[in-house]
Every structure is written in C-alpha cells, then in structure tokens.
Length: 95
Image (cartoon, rainbow, N blue to C red):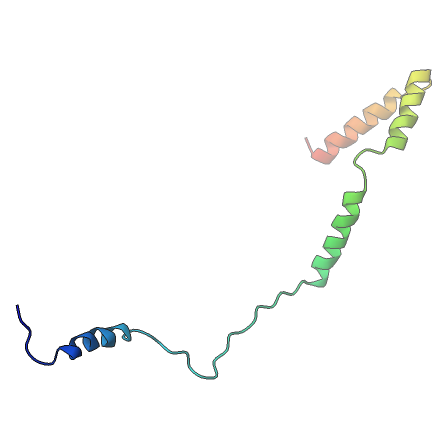
C-alpha cells in the first residue's frame, strides 16, 4: 500500500494526543503544612504515665518484711480484721 501526500504530518497527530489531559500547576499556589499540637492535659498525662512505668508493681520491701514475720512465726492476722475487710469489699461491690 502506498501513502501519497504529506507523510511527516502523521506523527504530529500522536504528539497532540499526548498533551491532552495534562494540567499545569497554577502560579502562586502553595500547600499548607500540617501542624500537631498536644494539650497541656495530655502532656500531664504523659508525664504521669512515665512516672508510673518506673514504679515497680511489687513492693519488695513489704514482701520481705511479711515473709520474715511468716517464717519466724510472728505473723498473726486477726480474724475480725479479715471479716471486716470481706464485708467492706461486699458493700463496695453492692452484692
């Protein structure tokens, strides 16, 4: 098949289609920066949480003291104190 006429114009058709759909940025437009702010209450909470992480869950001095009393046979618990604490816990739970 022979093509007669001005052949160099054929590639120009494809070049025009490549530019369709491109959007140029408007001059003077700039994006806003993100800003993070933490309230004073949140900062206080964070400070308290850091302090609590440093406090041990088990007070070894108390455990050692009671263990020594128990092993020596001098650890005595009054049954009335136990009953009072059981009753208090039941009242607090409202059972």
